[in-house]
Length: 186
Image 1 (cartoon, one colour):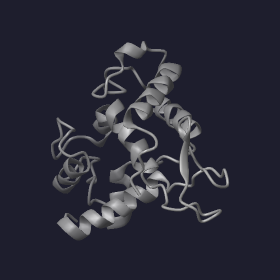
Image 2 (tube, helix red, strand yellow):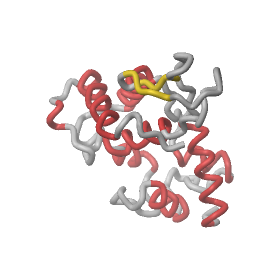
Image 3 (cartoon, rainbow, N blue to C red):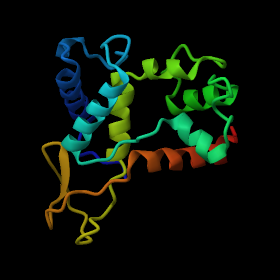
Image 4 (cartoon, rainbow, N blue to C red):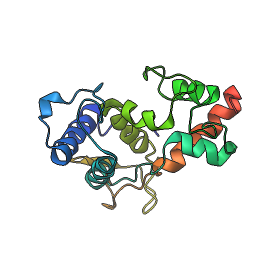
């Protein structure tokens, strides 16, 4: 269910806090199009720290694996990343669908190691929104539909339970199944 209790602006503000605390950069330098690696100086372990901070703030579980890793698992080794660690044509097609054309500089044959530099503050924020939008219609604890925002956490207004969301990896797998059914990429 697409929720409207926590806005994209709230998510982006929490993301900026997490980035500032992790990378010690000026908050003003963080824009939706900022590459965490190229513009903000993140290293691979920094992504884990930022994710952890977001998970704690929102009470969610973000994806542990990138979409292409799920492709390899679901559709077979070599379907997205060839034996030389390079992206296939199908991987590029899928990434363009996933990010609605908002990731530039994608081309078949590019090295998989170049992908993390394409992660922006905006794509990270979108990942949080995807998880938040998996809010169930009703509280599993009491069965009521009385969700309310408590800061940046969603709680049941009837019983006070924290909302339970799908995790990011499950959402990616669901999305891949849907895209495969509709577009037959793999």
